[in-house]
Image (tube, rainbow, N blue to C red):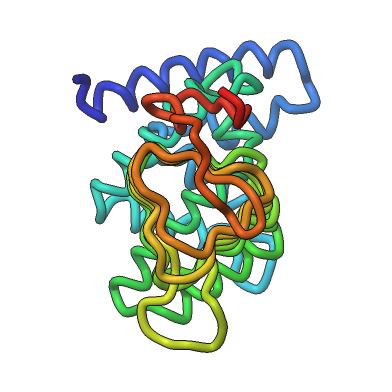
Length: 264
């Protein structure tokens, strides 16, 4: 398996080539592409620059947001590894993504999960007010509301991402695909461990609501619009309100296949 440094370097070469081609073909984007891609030293510098431009026109200046992201990326290798894994996941699973430039420049699912990674790093390092601030910006600008304490692995595809919500004690493992309007929520005003735990390989269809401290087993498939209130065993397909298991065995890795047809 390639190490993430090699993968990030390969992504960066391709993204810069794509940016140069787009810059020449579309002059309206030239200055933006020079600023956030072509003038940057590496992939992580570019990601920090792009997201800070999105989040920085508010009470905290763009340069300050950029510095926060750069600090987090430099301090935590795991964030960098997961950024690379996320970009690769998007490129492999999303048919609308025709190159590595797309998630960096245009996909708010990638921008929002990356912003959450920084907010989570701030949270874990005792900087909770700043973490909350980034969360609130992501909610307003991207329409994605992830509590800074929630834990996410790498290789996450937030496809479209609009109205995705994840509560404080949510856990999402590696290589999970999540469509828009999904909620990982609690059941009320209880405290403590109260949000879903999603294991690797899971595909969660658009509009699904997963409620409570439940476990979604490895490589399960959650049908669009389902309301899941109980544990889902591994390699199981559930649908409905409330969700119930079906006789349909999902693909070996539903998150990878992105096949949302419940019938097969």
